[in-house]
Image (cartoon, rainbow, N blue to C red):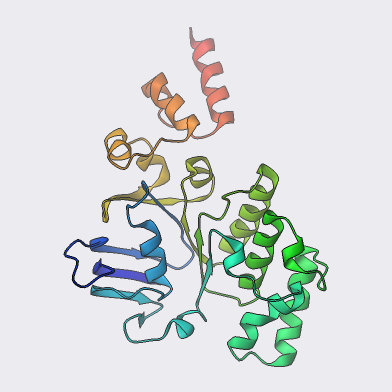
Length: 270
């Protein structure tokens, strides 16, 4: 579905320093992958190369068989939906219904099909279709943008810090919608600093540092690799940090319920 082959990227051809340096990885259809690392590690650059906003300076990025060097970003947009950190960068219409229709109109979807998809999404999200998106809270505006992406029926959804500025309930709702999309077969790539969220939802984690991939594996193993996390300036989820401190008898503990069960088991064994 997504493939990076020896990809490097620099914003200025005269600048010898690459933002991304010789990166290779593959994401299969239906995966839920998180890209993590410190600020400036290259995470957002990777995500913008997936949807064609940025083109590699070296190497190739393939999305569903399309080489992003050879196709327009608008063509890639038919396959890839992108949720930016700030929803106000994506909202451009004065009603929710118009906003949900906007991308479909740009892609040339028929009027009847557009109306059908928009009404289905309005119903799913319980929107007032005539409400102005800019009258809503930040969390609600983020939901509008997410809904507009869902209306496009993308094969891939990229999320760049999707829960920044949201409260717990807003964050939970956004991620539950994303989780259901993933269960339906949509490939999800999330760039995120919230390791609790990453651990709760992503099955695979790619760790970046200074424009290079330093780890790529399942979340259970990656978050228990102290050396990798230190190099990437990443603090593990609390449950993982606790289980690591408690020692080898808690190595397989991934949730609070598992931790409680493990503690009770150890207590009864004494």
